[in-house]
Amino acid sequence: MLPCVCWLQLMLILLSSVLRTRGENCPSNCMCPDPHTVDCSGRGLTRLPNEIPLDVRRLLLADNWIARIPSDFLVLYSDLVYLDLRNNSLSHIEPGTLSTSSRLVSWTGHLIKLRLGNNPYLSLVSEDAFLGLTSLRELELERNALSTLQVGALSQLPSLRAVRLEGNPWVCNCNFANLFAWLMENSQKLPNGVEGMECSLPMDGRRVSLTQLSKDSFRECQATLTLTDLLIIIFSGISVSVVAIMTSFFLASTVHCFQRWSKGTKGDEEESEE
Image 1: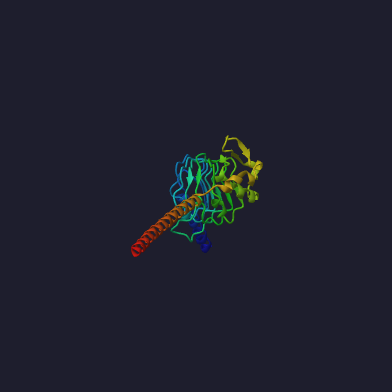
Image 2: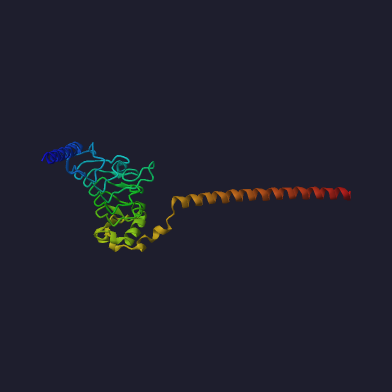
């Protein structure tokens, strides 16, 4: 009987230790329903809470006033698979925030679902914002303030299965052309298809459904010169001008020398005749 009592006491001690550790690791004003979940939704937070357990797997931060995410955030919480930042005050997502750091290029994120929708000030997502998130399957960027998005931000997510982009103030200009082509090729990844997306015409601001557009709608953009093209044209023009000037100078010098030589020869002949 005694060994059983000792074993039971040991189990109770371990259990109380685990419960006490869970309580100590849970950020203040948040809930931790299980050892790997931190729920800080709707707490009026203006920044990420302190003392988030490093082994957190589900971090719920929706319905707050969080304006930024610290640099290399996912490097610290490498076990994170679910991050909910809906309905906050994020304005931009920079490289190194939700991706690998340049100092840790071999790190690979385990994040599977990232929810960034309903951030009314989120107008900029860097092309490398999600670099390294090779496990990311679901990305939510709906109902933000995005007017454009570089395709590289999406094409570098090899495991992406679903992306929500509806409800943003997209502008149907040449900056949107590449994204439009990507959406047409990956429409199966849009939960509501392209039917749920609209963009504003640059001329009159009228909003149209993407279903009314085609690649021909952006045909003029194919002739649009990039900055590199312009630099090449300018450099080529300068090079041609320099070559033309040097050629003209060479020809003028040659003609001048020939004329002097001709005059000298004619003078010698006249002297010989005298």
